[in-house]
Structure formats: C-alpha cells, structure tokens
Image (cartoon, rainbow, N blue to C red):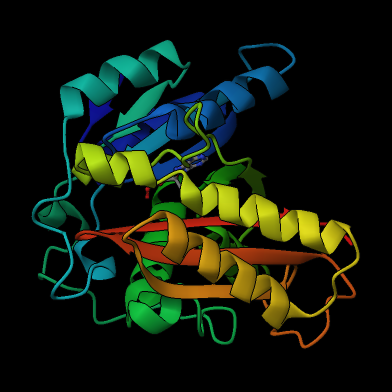
Amino acid sequence: MNIIKQIDALRENINQAKKQNKTIVFIPTMGFLHQGHLSMAELARRQDETRSKFYIVMSIFVNPLQFGPNEDYDKYPRDLSRDAELAQRAGVDIIFAPTVHEMYPEGTSLTTVSVAEVTEGLCGAGRPGHFQGVTTVVSKLFNIVQPDIAYFGQKDYQQAITIKKMVQDLNFPIEIIVAPTVREQDGLAMSSRNSYLSPEERRQAPVLYRSLQEGAALIKQGETRPEIIREKIVQRIRNESTGQIEYVEIRNADNLATTSIIDSNVVIALAVRLGSTRLIDNIVVEV
Ligand code: AMP
C-alpha cells in the first residue's frame, strides 16, 4: 500500500483504479488511527462481495481550517508510519496524506462551503467556524478523490448529518454511509483525543456513555420530556466526574431540529471537557 502526498499523483492513481471498473470508496480522517477509523475500512471490505471491486482510499490530513485559534491543531497527535501499517492491515488500498501547502497553496481558501441549520448549536456553538472548515475540506477531498461511496462515523453525529445535507444540496454523486461508533470495552468512544487524557480522566471518561445509555433507557421507558432526560444526564456526569459540561442536548435524529417533546427518533448528544480534553459522544434512540 502506498502513501501519496500529491493531488495529481492521487488523481492518476485513482484513474487507473477506475479503468479497472473499481468502486472508489473514500474514508476521510485526521489520522492517529484507531479501531473507529479502521472499522470503516473493514466494513467496506465486508460490503465488497468480490473483495476486490472496492478501491479504498483513506485520507489523513489534519485540516487547519476546522480548528479554532485556541484549539489543539498544533498538538493534535500525528504518526503517519504507524497509521500506514494499521490502514494496510484493515484493507486500505491507498493513503492520501497531503501537506497543508498541497491543500492550501495560498495559505487558506477564499472559497468556502457552509451548511446552515444543522451546523447550528451542539458542537457548532462551541466551535465557531469548525463545520465550515470541515465542509470546505471534505468538498475539496470529494473533488480530488471523486469517490462513489464515502464513510463517516456516527461518533461525530452532527458532522455526519452536515455532510449528508451538503451532498444532497450540492448534488455530489456520492453515497454516504454512517458507520457505528466503535467503543473501548468500558464504553468510551474511541477518539484520537483520548490519548490526551490523564489516567484519572481516562478512569472517569466512560461516564459519558453510561449517562447517554441511562437517558436512552428513560426514553424507552416512555419519558417524553427532553428536559428530564437532560437533567438526569447532567446530574450523573456531575456526580461521577470532574467533567465540565459544554452541552447535553436532545435533537431530532434526522435533521437535528430541537424538540420539546420526544415523539420521534432522537439523538442525545453531548460534549464534556475532562481537564483540557474535549470529548463528544451521542446515542440514537428510536421511538
Ligand atoms: P477524525 O480522524 O477524528 O476526523 O475522524 C475521521 C472519521 O472517523 C470521522 O468520520 C469520524 O466520525 C470517524 N470516527 C472517529 N472516531 C470514531 C469511532 N470511535 N467510531 C466510529 N467512527 C469514528
């Protein structure tokens, strides 16, 4: 498996695959791969009946556009040679790992893509400009790779909904597949940022998923008032950790609309800061 750093070389490589009638599958990441990322390649491999019709392209690019000025762009973990080994084992055919200069030769992009409504609130509130950075880079990557199918993780629920909306609104001919969140044994959603946690923070971190599960169970038992669910989750996180809650919200699972009564599928989403590490997680509850 090769690592390609130049856009032209990647296009040439993908053209060859297309000539062999391959289906181009794309998995965008920021690298420092864990099983959450790799599960998407494994899922694609399983969905590829012939095991050779899919050509799996994974990008590894820490996109400066989606980080705020006080965020962790500089310290974001990077390890390309380790990533390459893991990706190869998971069945990735080619890694695209461009430099910032390759993606933004003029330092930034005068053209941006932004999606309204679904990017408002939740992570959009605490990270101004974040989703515009994501949709801009994903649009660029979609134009470079021109995939037939692209995978995104449910872990970043608002991102997945935003990308789906962008693809629909801008007529990208790409099927978007949202892959389930992969978790550690104790329930903590895998994330490259988990590597920032101190041992004590790591011990506390599973409370996020425990509290989401408790919220989901209450809804399943018939609770329809979002504020009651929210309060239970907030209390549990406060009782069982030193985490600072950024948000706990219950939204419509399809379009992220706010809801005053739970009468259709919802997502419970949260962001909590443990020390200096911001963790997010969510759970979808079918009603
Ligand atoms: P990132 O490298 O954090 O930008 O993530 C790249 C892709 O992997 C995104 O589509 C994420 O939603 C997805 N992803 C990250 N963590 C997980 C996880 N624990 N389970 C499933 N997908 C994940």
